[in-house]
Amino acid sequence: MEKVKLPISFWIIGVLLLLWNLIGVMMFFFQMTADPATAFAEFSEDQRQLQIDLISNYPIWAKAGFAIAVFAGLIGSILLLLKNKLARPVFILSLIGMAIQVIYTAPFIMRDLGISGPMGLIFPLMIWGIAIFAIWYSGRMAARYFN
Image (cartoon, rainbow, N blue to C red; front, side, top):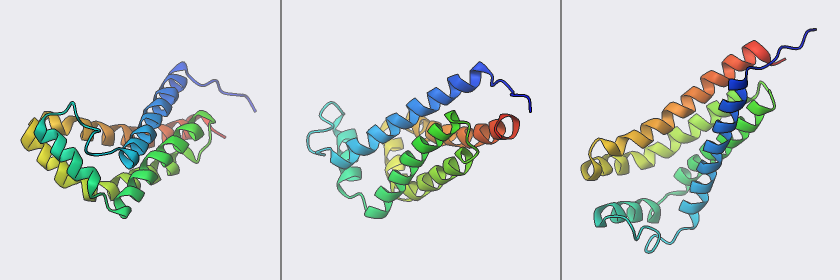
């Protein structure tokens, strides 16, 4: 069987997804350990109160969704770089974790729209877009290049 060479874009995208998901893991630990009273000192008063409300009342099921989202995303990125077909289902698990978490965070995102305007929606949409892209890309790479 002839070995098919992966395009350089595979490694670039794979490393970028790995870095993105490492940032997600860091944000998870920050939100789980931050002191809401001091963590957002540089924010405007409205933004600070929004973040304090979000973090102070985080239910365990939303924390679990957040953890599933970021750790599955990280594992999916590693599996992708290892050329493992399990990357796609693990990225799907990450998306499911995001869906669980957004049940809690959606009202805060809507409140942020009142504070930040439409710009407050760009980052949440970007997160979802990258997660969907990771599912699509890992499936495409698995079909073309992985054994």
